[in-house]
Amino acid sequence: MNTAFGTERLDAEPLSPAAHEAELAALHADERVMRTMGGSTATPDESRAWIERNLRHGQEPGLGIFVFRERESGAFVGRGAIRRIEIGGGEEIEVGYAVVADRWGRGLATEMAEGLVAHAEERGLLGLVAYTEPANAASRRVMEKVGFRFERDVEHHGRPQVLYRRNAAP
Image 1 (tube, helix red, strand yellow):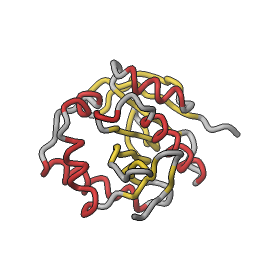
Image 2 (image 1 turned 120 degrees about the vertical axis):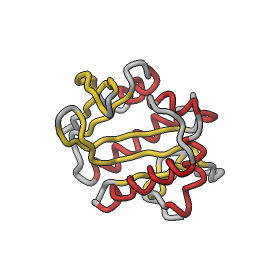
Image 3 (image 1 turned 45 degrees about the vertical axis):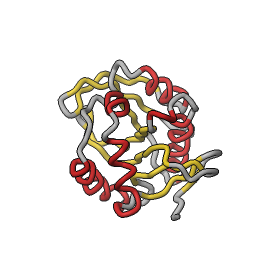
């Protein structure tokens, strides 16, 4: 396993199509998870296309898509991202996360987000953003716990979203 960084309970591995395709396909096919992200479930081919589109993020230092595993068991718990996106009329560096539904309510999203923020900021990536569906109260709480503050409503991929920003301490 090629660990990019870790948190108290989790290890983050850089995205690898061969190693992570099946786990991500299962995550992307789960109605509960995809509903929180405002999307529909994905077929295995659509999930593979998502992986291919997102591999480019790992080519820039500090950025990437990461698969998170519980350190103790090695179990897949979700995915996270530090990537450049176009949102709200400008290019931003986004922190994003998704946790498998069977692991919700254990603080894993907060731990993933904290790890992603620390990884980004240690590499000089500041002024990070995160976004979610307006009704996704759980994700909004996670963002606030790790220092993001509501900035404004935006439209992204044709859907209303709430944009949060984290301004790193000087």
